[in-house]
Amino acid sequence: MLDRKDEQGETVADWLRRYGQDPGQFASARIAPGSLAAIVELHIEQGPNLEEAKIPIGVVQGIVGLRRWKCVATGTANHAGTTPMTRRHDALATAARELLAVRDSVRAEDGRQVGTVGYIKAEPGAPNVIAGQVEFPYELRDLDTAKIERMYAATQKRFADIDREEGTAIVCTEVNHIEPALGDPCIQATIREAARTAGLATMDQEAGGNAYCLISTKIASTSSAGKQRDRSPCRQCRQPAPGTRTDGPQTGVPSIGPVLGKTKVAICPPTCGMLVHP
Image 1 (cartoon, rainbow, N blue to C red):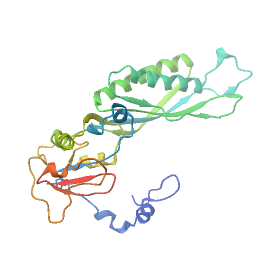
Image 2 (image 1 turned 180 degrees about the vertical axis):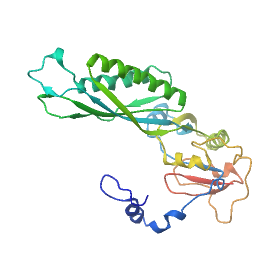
Image 3 (image 1 turned 90 degrees about the vertical axis):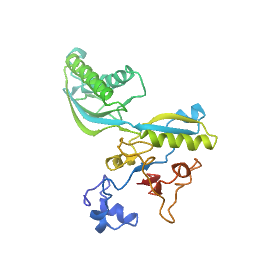
Image 4 (image 1 turned 60 degrees about the vertical axis):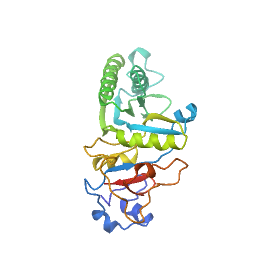
């Protein structure tokens, strides 16, 4: 793990040292399942919804699931000036139509789901050559797993139709599959109450980005997003340890610490605003 490299050749160990951490302690840096009751992430909204609604506080209902594929469309590279239009097997034309098929399949569903094609890479990439191969990724995001499955099925059906019409072939390989994580209703209610006490309006919304705290849902429920647990920090808690902070990072957002009352709260790094211990 420590030897894995990014695009610039930097290893995980390099990045840990850069931030003052000791790679030698990596294996011991563990949080045991059951040791945390919940995790609260404080975050700015990266979309336009709260600003447009003029509402200061969003109460996240969950972190959306994400599925991503890398697709390669294969046709026949040929001379652009001598190959008749009726004889072409243009991989770039296929990819362009399939990009729009992703958009149309997502728009056909009701809700806040999204689908994206982030880039298209055509080969050989010369202005006078019909593209023989094109690579593009596409991803689908939503809080509802069944909806993601429907959108995937719809895009694949459209891809097959387009391939048949263009005389090309496409292969899509899944490269990322992240399940949605639903928020804990008890902590959501706590956030609403904290905002109400401070005289601030709230709005329920989904977290469209796959926040780093999503990983933490494997060991605890979360307030901004997390899996339901039989045990809620609002029902089972104890007095904070001496010196433990209960106000979270200073964000201009009302603290939920006082509303959580006896729940033990500790600060974690900026990607996750607050740890709530049982």
